[in-house]
Amino acid sequence: MDVPTDPAALRRRQISHDIDHQLATIMLLASLIDTADDVGPVSRQRARQIIGEARWLERLHRAYAEPPSDRAELFRLDLVAREVVEAARLSTATAIDLEAVESWVRADHLACWRALRNLVGNAVRSAGPAGRVRVGVVGDGTWTVALVDDDGPGFGAASPGTQSLGLGIAHGFATVWDGHLDIRRGTLGGCRARLRLRAATAPGAAPGLRSEATRDDCSGPHGEARGPERSLGAKEALGARASGASANSSGPSCAC
Image (cartoon, rainbow, N blue to C red; front, top):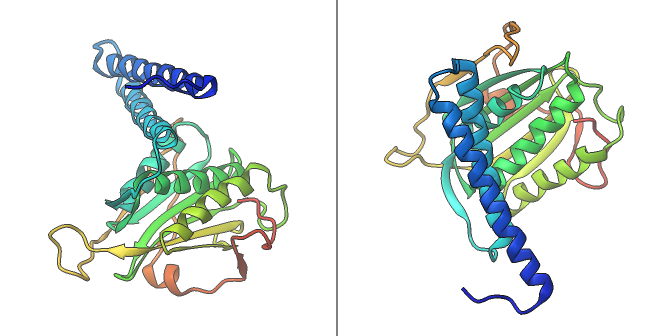
Protein backbone atom coordinates (compact mmCIF):
# COMPACT_ATOMS: atom_id res chain seq x y z
CA MET A 1 0.00 0.00 0.00
CA ASP A 2 1.36 3.41 -1.02
CA VAL A 3 2.08 5.84 1.79
CA PRO A 4 0.52 9.28 1.12
CA THR A 5 3.03 12.08 0.69
CA ASP A 6 0.52 14.79 1.60
CA PRO A 7 0.68 15.41 5.38
CA ALA A 8 -3.10 15.79 5.69
CA ALA A 9 -3.74 12.57 3.74
CA LEU A 10 -1.15 10.73 5.81
CA ARG A 11 -2.79 11.93 9.02
CA ARG A 12 -6.20 10.73 7.79
CA ARG A 13 -4.69 7.33 6.94
CA GLN A 14 -3.15 7.06 10.40
CA ILE A 15 -6.37 8.07 12.16
CA SER A 16 -8.31 5.60 10.02
CA HIS A 17 -5.91 2.86 11.08
CA ASP A 18 -6.36 3.77 14.75
CA ILE A 19 -10.15 3.79 14.42
CA ASP A 20 -10.10 0.33 12.83
CA HIS A 21 -7.92 -0.94 15.68
CA GLN A 22 -10.18 0.50 18.38
CA LEU A 23 -13.33 -0.89 16.78
CA ALA A 24 -11.72 -4.34 16.56
CA THR A 25 -10.77 -4.08 20.24
CA ILE A 26 -14.32 -3.12 21.25
CA MET A 27 -15.77 -6.07 19.32
CA LEU A 28 -13.23 -8.46 20.85
CA LEU A 29 -13.98 -7.30 24.40
CA ALA A 30 -17.73 -7.52 23.82
CA SER A 31 -17.29 -11.03 22.38
CA LEU A 32 -15.43 -12.07 25.53
CA ILE A 33 -18.34 -10.81 27.64
CA ASP A 34 -20.84 -12.62 25.41
CA THR A 35 -19.04 -15.96 25.88
CA ALA A 36 -18.13 -15.55 29.55
CA ASP A 37 -19.56 -17.97 32.12
CA ASP A 38 -20.17 -15.34 34.81
CA VAL A 39 -22.66 -13.06 32.99
CA GLY A 40 -26.42 -13.29 32.69
CA PRO A 41 -28.70 -13.15 29.63
CA VAL A 42 -29.27 -9.39 29.85
CA SER A 43 -25.54 -8.69 29.83
CA ARG A 44 -25.08 -11.09 26.92
CA GLN A 45 -27.76 -9.25 24.97
CA ARG A 46 -26.06 -5.93 25.63
CA ALA A 47 -22.69 -7.34 24.62
CA ARG A 48 -24.13 -8.61 21.34
CA GLN A 49 -25.69 -5.21 20.74
CA ILE A 50 -22.31 -3.56 21.28
CA ILE A 51 -20.81 -5.91 18.69
CA GLY A 52 -23.57 -5.08 16.23
CA GLU A 53 -23.19 -1.34 16.75
CA ALA A 54 -19.42 -1.57 16.36
CA ARG A 55 -19.85 -3.41 13.08
CA TRP A 56 -22.12 -0.67 11.78
CA LEU A 57 -19.53 1.91 12.84
CA GLU A 58 -16.85 -0.08 11.03
CA ARG A 59 -18.94 -0.06 7.84
CA LEU A 60 -19.66 3.64 8.25
CA HIS A 61 -15.99 4.41 8.71
CA ARG A 62 -15.00 2.42 5.64
CA ALA A 63 -17.71 4.14 3.59
CA TYR A 64 -16.15 7.51 4.35
CA ALA A 65 -12.59 6.27 3.84
CA GLU A 66 -13.18 4.49 0.52
CA PRO A 67 -14.09 6.05 -2.85
CA PRO A 68 -17.84 6.24 -3.56
CA SER A 69 -19.29 3.24 -5.38
CA ASP A 70 -22.61 1.69 -6.30
CA ARG A 71 -23.61 0.07 -3.02
CA ALA A 72 -26.96 -1.34 -4.15
CA GLU A 73 -27.80 -4.42 -2.11
CA LEU A 74 -30.90 -6.60 -1.77
CA PHE A 75 -31.93 -6.71 1.88
CA ARG A 76 -34.91 -6.77 4.23
CA LEU A 77 -35.99 -3.36 5.46
CA ASP A 78 -37.89 -4.92 8.36
CA LEU A 79 -34.69 -6.47 9.72
CA VAL A 80 -32.85 -3.16 9.53
CA ALA A 81 -35.73 -1.54 11.42
CA ARG A 82 -35.65 -4.29 14.03
CA GLU A 83 -31.92 -3.83 14.58
CA VAL A 84 -32.33 -0.07 14.94
CA VAL A 85 -35.21 -0.49 17.40
CA GLU A 86 -33.35 -3.06 19.49
CA ALA A 87 -30.36 -0.74 19.80
CA ALA A 88 -32.57 2.20 20.75
CA ARG A 89 -34.41 0.17 23.40
CA LEU A 90 -31.16 -0.57 25.20
CA SER A 91 -30.19 3.09 25.36
CA THR A 92 -33.44 4.82 26.34
CA ALA A 93 -36.39 4.49 28.70
CA THR A 94 -38.78 5.58 25.92
CA ALA A 95 -41.26 2.83 25.04
CA ILE A 96 -40.64 1.73 21.44
CA ASP A 97 -43.06 -0.64 19.69
CA LEU A 98 -42.28 -2.42 16.44
CA GLU A 99 -44.59 -4.06 13.92
CA ALA A 100 -42.99 -5.26 10.70
CA VAL A 101 -43.83 -7.26 7.61
CA GLU A 102 -41.04 -9.05 5.72
CA SER A 103 -40.19 -6.39 3.15
CA TRP A 104 -37.35 -6.42 0.62
CA VAL A 105 -35.71 -3.40 -1.00
CA ARG A 106 -32.67 -2.80 -3.18
CA ALA A 107 -30.63 0.15 -1.97
CA ASP A 108 -27.52 1.11 -0.02
CA HIS A 109 -27.78 -1.02 3.13
CA LEU A 110 -25.57 1.25 5.22
CA ALA A 111 -27.32 4.43 4.08
CA CYS A 112 -30.68 2.84 4.91
CA TRP A 113 -29.47 2.04 8.43
CA ARG A 114 -28.30 5.63 8.82
CA ALA A 115 -31.67 6.97 7.66
CA LEU A 116 -33.74 4.77 10.00
CA ARG A 117 -31.34 5.32 12.89
CA ASN A 118 -31.79 9.07 12.54
CA LEU A 119 -35.58 8.88 12.19
CA VAL A 120 -35.95 6.66 15.27
CA GLY A 121 -33.41 8.73 17.22
CA ASN A 122 -35.31 11.92 16.43
CA ALA A 123 -38.59 10.33 17.49
CA VAL A 124 -37.10 9.10 20.77
CA ARG A 125 -35.72 12.54 21.60
CA SER A 126 -39.05 14.14 20.76
CA ALA A 127 -41.08 11.67 22.83
CA GLY A 128 -38.78 11.85 25.84
CA PRO A 129 -38.14 9.14 28.46
CA ALA A 130 -41.82 8.94 29.46
CA GLY A 131 -43.09 8.96 25.87
CA ARG A 132 -43.82 6.38 23.20
CA VAL A 133 -42.50 5.68 19.72
CA ARG A 134 -44.04 3.28 17.22
CA VAL A 135 -42.09 1.87 14.27
CA GLY A 136 -43.75 -0.03 11.45
CA VAL A 137 -42.64 -1.59 8.16
CA VAL A 138 -45.30 -2.47 5.58
CA GLY A 139 -45.53 -2.96 1.83
CA ASP A 140 -47.95 -3.48 -1.05
CA GLY A 141 -45.63 -5.04 -3.63
CA THR A 142 -44.84 -1.69 -5.25
CA TRP A 143 -43.66 0.33 -2.28
CA THR A 144 -42.03 -0.67 0.98
CA VAL A 145 -42.73 1.82 3.75
CA ALA A 146 -41.08 2.49 7.10
CA LEU A 147 -43.22 4.50 9.53
CA VAL A 148 -41.90 6.20 12.66
CA ASP A 149 -44.49 7.80 14.96
CA ASP A 150 -43.94 9.58 18.27
CA ASP A 151 -46.14 11.23 20.89
CA GLY A 152 -43.91 14.29 21.22
CA PRO A 153 -44.93 17.95 20.90
CA GLY A 154 -45.34 17.80 17.13
CA PHE A 155 -44.88 20.36 14.37
CA GLY A 156 -43.20 23.63 15.26
CA ALA A 157 -43.09 22.90 19.00
CA ALA A 158 -39.33 22.36 19.29
CA SER A 159 -36.14 23.72 17.79
CA PRO A 160 -35.01 21.58 14.82
CA GLY A 161 -31.40 21.29 16.05
CA THR A 162 -29.92 17.88 15.27
CA GLN A 163 -33.37 16.69 14.17
CA SER A 164 -33.10 18.70 10.95
CA LEU A 165 -29.68 17.20 10.22
CA GLY A 166 -31.05 13.69 10.77
CA LEU A 167 -34.04 14.39 8.54
CA GLY A 168 -31.64 15.68 5.90
CA ILE A 169 -29.71 12.41 5.99
CA ALA A 170 -32.92 10.39 5.64
CA HIS A 171 -34.25 12.64 2.89
CA GLY A 172 -30.98 12.38 0.97
CA PHE A 173 -31.09 8.59 1.15
CA ALA A 174 -34.69 8.48 -0.09
CA THR A 175 -33.91 10.83 -2.98
CA VAL A 176 -30.89 8.85 -4.18
CA TRP A 177 -32.88 5.59 -4.23
CA ASP A 178 -36.01 6.91 -5.95
CA GLY A 179 -38.01 7.04 -2.74
CA HIS A 180 -39.81 9.65 -0.67
CA LEU A 181 -39.68 10.99 2.86
CA ASP A 182 -42.79 12.70 4.23
CA ILE A 183 -43.25 14.33 7.63
CA ARG A 184 -46.81 14.73 8.86
CA ARG A 185 -49.01 14.59 11.94
CA GLY A 186 -48.86 11.09 13.39
CA THR A 187 -51.38 8.79 15.02
CA LEU A 188 -49.74 9.18 18.44
CA GLY A 189 -50.25 12.95 18.48
CA GLY A 190 -46.72 13.95 17.49
CA CYS A 191 -44.95 13.51 14.18
CA ARG A 192 -44.92 10.68 11.68
CA ALA A 193 -41.93 10.14 9.40
CA ARG A 194 -42.84 8.01 6.39
CA LEU A 195 -39.96 6.63 4.36
CA ARG A 196 -41.06 5.00 1.09
CA LEU A 197 -38.75 2.88 -1.07
CA ARG A 198 -39.36 0.82 -4.19
CA ALA A 199 -40.23 -2.73 -3.20
CA ALA A 200 -37.97 -5.56 -4.38
CA THR A 201 -38.76 -9.24 -4.83
CA ALA A 202 -37.37 -11.60 -2.22
CA PRO A 203 -34.78 -14.10 -3.47
CA GLY A 204 -36.56 -17.20 -4.77
CA ALA A 205 -40.03 -15.71 -4.24
CA ALA A 206 -42.68 -15.08 -6.86
CA PRO A 207 -43.49 -11.39 -7.42
CA GLY A 208 -46.28 -10.18 -5.19
CA LEU A 209 -45.68 -12.79 -2.47
CA ARG A 210 -46.22 -11.24 0.96
CA SER A 211 -45.49 -12.36 4.48
CA GLU A 212 -47.59 -11.96 7.58
CA ALA A 213 -46.82 -9.11 9.93
CA THR A 214 -44.88 -9.83 13.08
CA ARG A 215 -45.59 -7.95 16.27
CA ASP A 216 -42.84 -6.92 18.67
CA ASP A 217 -43.98 -5.24 21.88
CA CYS A 218 -41.00 -6.25 24.00
CA SER A 219 -40.45 -4.46 27.27
CA GLY A 220 -37.85 -1.73 27.53
CA PRO A 221 -34.38 -1.98 28.99
CA HIS A 222 -35.71 -1.75 32.54
CA GLY A 223 -38.47 -4.33 32.06
CA GLU A 224 -41.35 -1.87 31.89
CA ALA A 225 -44.55 -3.30 30.41
CA ARG A 226 -45.87 -2.02 27.13
CA GLY A 227 -49.55 -1.86 26.42
CA PRO A 228 -51.19 -2.99 23.19
CA GLU A 229 -51.29 -0.62 20.24
CA ARG A 230 -53.46 -0.48 17.16
CA SER A 231 -52.00 -2.36 14.19
CA LEU A 232 -50.56 -0.50 11.22
CA GLY A 233 -52.08 -1.80 8.01
CA ALA A 234 -50.64 -1.43 4.54
CA LYS A 235 -53.70 0.54 3.42
CA GLU A 236 -53.25 3.07 6.22
CA ALA A 237 -49.53 3.40 5.64
CA LEU A 238 -49.69 3.75 1.88
CA GLY A 239 -52.92 5.62 1.30
CA ALA A 240 -53.77 7.72 4.35
CA ARG A 241 -53.49 11.47 3.86
CA ALA A 242 -52.97 13.36 7.09
CA SER A 243 -52.16 17.05 7.29
CA GLY A 244 -48.45 17.59 7.08
CA ALA A 245 -45.60 18.48 4.79
CA SER A 246 -42.78 17.01 2.78
CA ALA A 247 -39.42 16.81 4.51
CA ASN A 248 -37.49 19.62 2.84
CA SER A 249 -35.90 22.90 3.74
CA SER A 250 -39.09 24.88 3.15
CA GLY A 251 -41.29 22.63 5.26
CA PRO A 252 -42.44 23.33 8.82
CA SER A 253 -40.21 22.79 11.79
CA CYS A 254 -40.84 19.40 13.33
CA ALA A 255 -39.78 17.97 16.64
CA CYS A 256 -39.45 14.45 15.28
